[in-house]
Every structure is written in C-alpha cells, then in structure tokens.
Length: 424
Ligand code: AMP
Image (cartoon, rainbow, N blue to C red; front, side, top):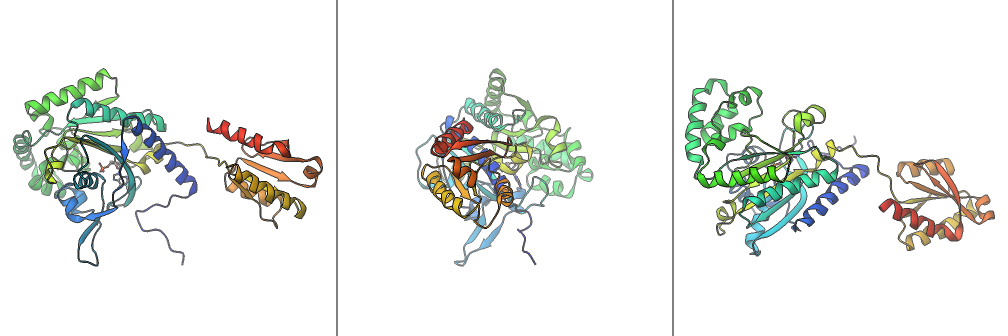
C-alpha cells in the first residue's frame, strides 16, 4: 500500500512550491520597504508560552494545540501561531525597541480539515513591537494591502474593528453576558461555554443562527474608553484620508485573546472568496491587531505592539497564476556523436550560471521533448548530425512553439540575453 500524507497536511509539489515561493518573495519585498527584518523561531515551544498568550479560552488552545511530553518530561507544543515565539525571543534576547520583525513558516492546529483550513499551514507574519501611535496601525494595514496588491490580489480590503482594552471590557462584558443569558436557549453549546468563560469570543462563532442573533448583541466598539476611542478615531480617519480600502465591522473579534484596540482582517469583499474558492467562514486571508499587554504579560515592561499573520495556502487558492516555466535549458542530442557535444555544452552553460539538463543518451527526440515539457522548460536545444555539419544548434521555444538556428559560438550569448529578458 502506498503511504499518504497525514490528514490536514499538504504536499507542495514543484509547481505549487514555485507559486508559494512567489508569494513569499512578494511578501519579503514589501515588508523590507517598511523596515522589517526576519526572525526565525522554533516550530515547537514550551506549551506554557501559548497558554499565557494565545489564551486559555480560545479554540486554538483548548481544542487545537498539538502538544506532547518530550523525553525529558517537558510539556511542548507545536506552535499554533507565530506571535508568542517572537515576543518571547524579543524579551529573551533583550532586543532594542522599537523593533520590526517578520517571519515565515509552518503553524499547526488540530482543526477539522476542509478547503482553506489545514492542520499544518504556512503563515507570513509581521510584528512591530514598541510603537504606540495609531498611525502605525494604519501603516501596518496599508502594508498588508500593498502586499496583496503586489501579489496579484488588488481587490483585498481590510475589515477593521476596535476590541478596546482592559478598561473598556468589564462594562461591555456585563452587558453582553446579560444579552447572552436572555438568549441562552437560542445559542449553540459552544457559545454557552463561551458566554461563561469569555463572552467576547461568541462573536467568533461560525453557526449562522448565533451569527444572526449577535447582530443585535452589545458590541465592544460602543463601550470604548476615552483613550481607545481617540486611538480608533485616528485610525479610521487616517485610513480614509490615505484612501486605504477598508470596512468597519463591529462584529469582528479575532480568535486570539491578547488583542487590544485595533483588530483587523484581510478579506476579499462581497463574500467572493467564500463563494468561489473557500467554504463558509474561511474568507479571511490574514488578520492581526494591536496587543499592547502581551509583552507585559510575558514579564517585560509595558510595551505597545501590533502585528498580523497571512495564510499562504488561502492566498494561493485565490491567485490565478499562469503555468510557470523554468529557465532550465533542456539539451537533446540525437546520437552518440552529438551526445559528446551536448555534454560539453551542458558544462559550458552551467559554468555561465545558466541552469541546464541533458536528455538521457538512450532516449529519442520525442521522449526528450516530453521530458522537457514535464519539467516546464521553456527552451530546448536540439543537436543532430545536421546541426553539427552546419555548426549550429536548433533552439526551440516550447511555449511559443518557434525554433531558430543559432551559431554554436553564439549560443551562450543568445541564451544569456533571453534569460535577462525574462527576468525583466
Ligand atoms: P490567525 O493566526 O488565526 O489570526 O489566522 C491568520 C490567517 O492564517 C488566517 O486569516 C488564515 O488565512 C490563516 N489560517 C489560520 N488558520 C488556518 C488553517 N487552519 N489553515 C489554513 N490557513 C489558516
């Protein structure tokens, strides 16, 4: 029996890997423009790190964490998200603040797998630690949208809300709890638990009946303290002033406990994503927000911070990318004599940094063209007796279906030129 990958995981085969690489490159290019540097943290951490940050009442921690006891009897967890590890590292190595960091890598959540929702998935994320002002929130949201634009998804908008702070939440919590107890018979079992443990979480519920009911529930936005109100007003007016495409959504709370003030998601508007590419609630391509208490909760000084994480698989599902061709030149010698010439050319190409492969000696032209097509090579060089006699190579473009004869001593020059053209 052939073994398969574990449920909820994905293999990125070469063509998909190329697309993933494209998305990551766009991300790296954009965040570099805003002064972010890369940080790499472990894929597993002490479980306690996530209990103290992501939150004891979140689905991620209560239901979805991959935990294990290691051989030294330590409680470990595969990271379900990137922020806690980054904040830990900032404090552990006493990085000078403010600091702007980005990361890229796999995250793990034991979820019910479905389209756009996996147990191992890749995130691209940023964290700005030590910057308090609301214009930073706008800069971060605008940067996210710039990435989507550059990656080929200019329609993406930001959905924004303010989830307030420790000062505004108690009053809202009382009102919301009252609303929920008045409607106990109408809400799902999960929401019954949420209403006891952390009522704000009910807005995360994916059940349609609950969602409809919560349209009339008290919203945190209407309970903001003076400082949170001022902060959010600046965010909204600057977003509008800078013509950043966004919509205010009072129902949006993020699935993590540590967010304060500005919270946001990146979505394709009009439910386009949920209808066409993804199912139901998986319409968010990324999300984030302020987390002004987390550094302090980890034992650091009071430090404002903000970040977001983007889901690579979901972005790839929305991108319509043309079949990528490879720059590898595929050399097809037609007999034993030309094979020697082919080997020489192979070495010469690689020495000039042109990627190249040669068709196996016992395979014919047809098989060779088939291989080249499989490898998505744009160019093939054919060397037969005819070419040897005329001192040329036949250069075939498999995409445009054209071919030309190139003098043997000009081939490197011609190929270098073509490679430069495709780069531009
Ligand atoms: P979160 O870390 O929950 O704020 O999620 C940020 C982004 O990561 C989401 O908007 C999704 O694009 C992506 N994401 C979260 N969970 C999953 C998952 N289980 N599978 C695939 N992508 C995910």
